[in-house]
Image (tube, rainbow, N blue to C red; front, side):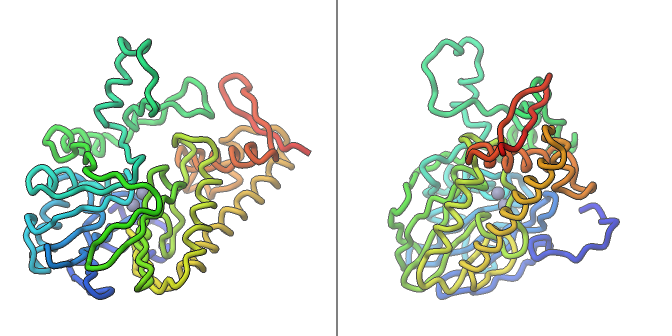
Amino acid sequence: MEPSIEHRPRRQEQEPASSEITEVAPNILRSQLPVFLPGLGHVNCYFLEDDRGVAIVDPGLPGPQSWRALVARLKAAGYKPRNVHTVIVTHSHPDHFGGAGRLRDRYGAEVVTHRSFHTWFDPADDEALDPDDAEGPVSDSAPRPAPWGRSMPWKAGQFQPPLKRRMRYRVLRAVASGFMRTPSPTRRVDDAEVITLAGREWVSLHTPGHTDDHLCLFDPTEGVVLSGDHVLPTITPHISGLVAGADPLTAFFTSLDKVGALEGVRLALPAHGHPFADLAGRALEIREHHEERLETLRTAAGELGRASVEDLSKRLFKPRSWGQMAESETYAHLEHLRATGQAESRYEGDELHYQLIR
Ligand SMILES: [Zn+2]
Ligand SMILES: [Zn+2]
């Protein structure tokens, strides 16, 4: 990681991956795999043990480095990759599905995701991008170009700035080597299905917001929730304005309320950071954080009148965060105001502008 100039305290989620394996609940082990993304030092890969072997949750980034770490962690817990019978992927971000394709192809593991799981490099999407196909049947999923070539709805005709070249090569190398094969799920679950792992029954919870395909698992008997990136202990997950579906923030609020209302939760197991107890309290805190952002936006929009997403994002974020991520999150909040009848939008030239409705 690049050294930080401002010495902000390190968040739990930024801690580098420890090689330690800890038992966090009966038959549930926490391992950590290295992650090389801004603001994240590790991803938790949970091992759910049973008499068939082990199911693992979120097998890290694509690529040999994460794979080697995963094999080492499994070994430390007494397993080999062939003992992994099931892989749960909480959502379609690369730090969560990395090893899934390999475990399925080479070791026959079942890959479980939410019904709507998708990635931008799904073969179906490549077909949808084929210009010859433009007149073809309408696909139920919009084409998802690579993240370095996607247009931003709030700046018509402009594209996201390219990923850092190094990152781009890393992604392309991983695709070429087969490490980044789409982890085609073998089992897609809906909301409220029962899955038996670690000798107990889990209920699937569809929790859209951070991504539209986010899945949590709840064990009502012991009160354990695998919360993925939906609820993290000290950071708020990015809510992107670039996801399919209008108003991801409303979806996120609904999903926060949904896990907040679960009864008997004693332990939340997040994908980044330490396990924690008060899931409902943390879900509420994250919701309040976004409510505050909406309030800040309403105030800024009141002062600025009609204003661009970029200008409004600068009222919401500190200068060190300005840029495409901040604009994307601001856009998601503005779309929420629009969808709930509090603001209206229109293009002025290439830029989308918002104004409060009084
Ligand atoms: Zn994520
Ligand atoms: Zn993540």
